[in-house]
Length: 439
Image (tube, rainbow, N blue to C red; front, side, top):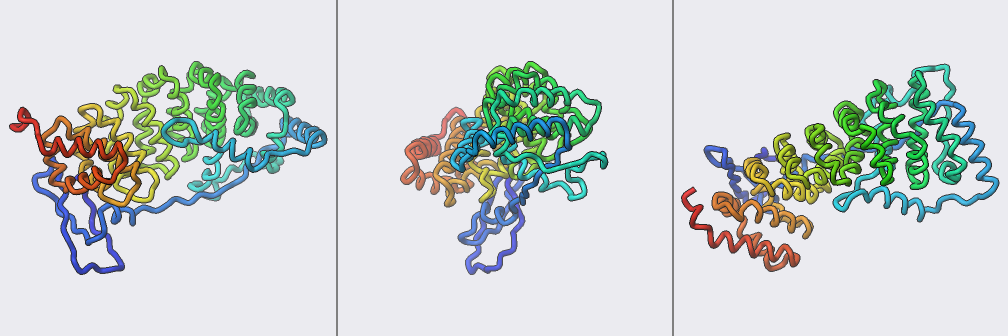
């Protein structure tokens, strides 16, 4: 059942109306007062607040690696003054954001900008050893201007440093590999071929949260390379990535979700990722994460739930309730994505039952009748058709939720696909199946 207390409005309404939402599990309908011209989704949206983000720069300890990078940067700057243009940088950003056919899921290009948003200032990446001299990192332009063949010795030093007993040295090495793998495809391939993956995976269980964060983000960036996906999977990273998803910082959890998404693009990994327990912590991130964390969790769940066994795991983990809540929110940029995942879960019986129990029919009707995107309306009617095609009971709920008028309007003004689905659903509503009439 969808329920929400009235929110106060600065504007009073002369003609209040009552809309009744029904839940099959409730003994009586719950009445919700709603003012004319204000839908429940509009009321709910007033409770939604955007998270804040902030940018930061990392302090990396002085080391032999820094000396190598400095020498290479100086060498490159002498030989060529060309740096990445804005157009090229945007191209890399666009490529890094296109990990799947469903949603943008970035590497740490966007994630690191929000890294300190939830970290108290006293906890910001300070080196535990005050005797280690620190300095700002090399800029992206300098790193990007270095040729891959010149980076081989530095990458080797970084990988060797990951074996150091010093947490500070391992953290610094992981941070540099993360940076080197951040944009360029040839760097990712080189780092993977050099043996970085098996050296980074143990750091996913490191007690130091920032070392863990650098390691998981480095692996995420490396996983953009197809060859590295196999190396990461064969190195046993799935269980360790799930560990980060449960225990890491906000950014670590987000990037672990993205890394698992990337690995799930290999079909045979989907079942193993689900079997290893990834879905419950993804659902937790969907419920409690930041805006970006929720988007990352949504995208990962979408990919994993293309397998029926994972759909069952997702329903059992309580995925449907937060999905319905996201569909009901306006302005969060996630309603359409949530509807896609809901539609996926509605393909199995337990998923359909859970959607109905959580008040999904009423929320989907509201998505159709409000001034949302046409794509969102299309997703909503497809899901409703899925719920009502073989259930007279669900059709009755749809009628009681006031679904007929918005469906008629959609059948006349929607996209071609939305019109077709709306007409099919209206036909089912007019001609319920006799064999189910007694149920």
